[in-house]
Length: 283
Length: 317
Image (cartoon, rainbow over all chains, first blue to last red; front, side, top):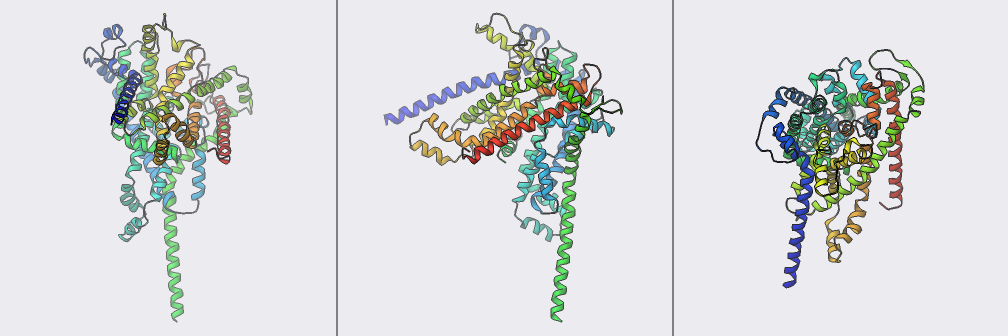
């Protein structure tokens, strides 16, 4: 009796200590974000007087408005949205279709495609960045939105294809047969029967691609070098920092605008994201 | 008569099946085609052309491409800035990968406890840097590690420092600081990797260990760790490959400075091929550096894979 009380008690104390340590670690971990968000609400004077505090005196919106209106962040935001939306659509359509064909049917050439895609996992980006830019230039798409979208959608997307393939492979054959009985062709069976069944994989694919594209930096940096009006947020923020070294509150406001959508999407769809990543490392 | 009928029927079904097979093959190829095109244009074709570019003198601006053979490679291996960048990327990788692996594992083990309340909230918070664009991290961390920033303030309050250190502007501190920021950025994703591994360990093993009276540490070292080694090898591979390619973080945090102290191969290629900071942009020369370094990465991956298969053969894994 006495003994079990002691054990329970020591358990709760160690749990309490664990929580204290975790809260401390998380505070340090989150400090850069807290600093960024609070700085975007501070006035210049407040920032220089009390730059490190994470609670602003008041919720002064002028930095956010300045970044949004005069520093072009509204334009960058729209660009990022268009780029991300298009890339996700293209990648989702091409990888789900490819995964469906590879996962469910055997057809001549299938093995070759598999081998090629898996090999491409080991190709370092160093090989491709200059040729990709040269290709986009050769297509006459340099410094255009379409060029950025195309380059960002490029690649074999092995991970997503394999995710779709293994998911489609384990759906029972009867689903298709009954669809064929109902007179559905190949395309209609895929769109109306198979895709709706693959919702969890679509969720993982969408969230991973959204975050990846929203944050991507190197390709859009190079492809928008001489056309600032099509820059996405990541590149726009970097350029803004270069041009306005002293406007820290404006920079912080721009950074907050850039990161907020991804954080919200991540928190809402977190489950799918974690499942996708875990699948990648297990597979 | 009846026999002929059966053969005719068989022929009919087999021709139907053939038709059906051809129909399926047609659609399958149509379905894989878009992805194959994206793969060919943006992954396969670049491998072929990067060789061609690497052996030519080309600014990327004009259509004038002059074949120069191995001259770019010759120049490359005699360029001390290239070797500086080459050395730096390995310092960065060996400095950051062990820490992000260990910290990620530590968080994963603590947060894998199903009885721990709020574990998912802690997990989300630690994961946030992973989903944040490197340009934001570069800018925000640029302030936090500056002489006016939070790190110097804390160290001075604790009495560890008398005068603030310009962490990112000093030759001595720039690389360690970049490594620390990178560890902060990548621990979250490693935590998720390790959690995936931990969830694959059968619960009965832990119950057995508990009944045998094994403590937390004993259980960790004799059950958890050995069973994590196979997935750990994959995680290590991911980390090394990712770290060797670091670009965004360095570009936004230090831009390779001060005086090339944090210049890595990818930033070296970028300034040679696109920025033209040393005169004209040189896509050909940049490609040569890319091809050279690409082979280094492939070579390293092969070594890691070889060690993995050897360990497997010896049943360590």
